[in-house]
Image (cartoon, rainbow, N blue to C red; front, side):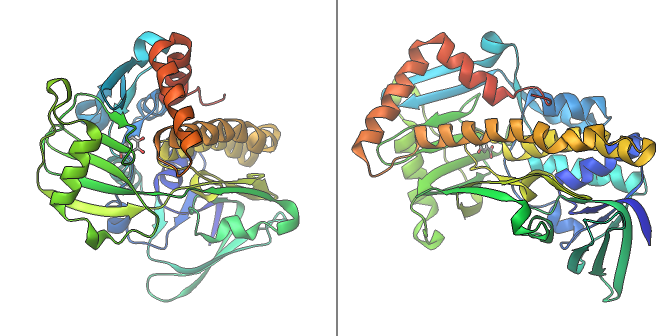
Length: 391
Ligand code: DHB
């Protein structure tokens, strides 16, 4: 088999890349270790930056997003006895849209299937070969157990942090940075109307809490918990009680309405960057190159921005043999990656309890500054609603 662009991973990054390449007249083949059903059921964050929404609209992927997405002007930041609304539209003229990554992935899966995209699901043993030559190739075992070889002009790793692409770049050619955080999130999906019109990010002495949502009838909530937390120790009642305390139930007449929990899981938190995002004929996009902690919901948006830069770069390389954009890809993408890496680290460390009482005073000082300074709020808003793709 031969294709101009071999894509490893059929998550949102790989699917969107194949869509954008198709629009540019370049064919691709995708391989994915999981099943389509699994990929389209994974629960992830649910906030789309303005640039992500714009791109999905411009490329014909927004039918359902336009119908079901919920545009939010901003967020609430709070700590005990105080709640402040940050209006991103007033501050920076940009908004965000509540629409689950799971839904984006389903929409992409449907669009690619309709376009006849070749996707090998449930493959095993994917390996990347000869990326330093001009004849790179992939090998894998397909769903029927048959070994396959896929020759390509270029290979793109959209295979997340555990895929084979990141590690295919030799140690001598790469640098990595990592920060693990001393806490995790307990994430809850509940069949209950959200108790708030926009997201609440709450600093609390018991630990961070957040109230997000997926629709008018589904709430998404998070609690800071210690690393290594056994989910069995968190009954639904204990979860709702902790959420009520940390989110300020009863404060200024605000109430949290509990409801049936349909999913709960513990999420570790990590920052990671590997650079460069290209080695020879292998390019990395999304989680394959960088991981952000969830606070601020940057993961999907960063992957979309990578792919938006990568698609024209690959198309001009394959079609016109012009390598200008491809040569600039890693540096261009990393500018935005590091900005979002800083922003998610900042939101995370500003809002989560640590053991250090000095940190606590600094956190409250920052929150008070945001409440009182329009410049402070505009900085948060600019990063949260998202910088332009080519930042
Ligand atoms: C969600 C997740 C986030 O990490 C965040 O900052 C905002 C929203 C979510 O899952 O809805």
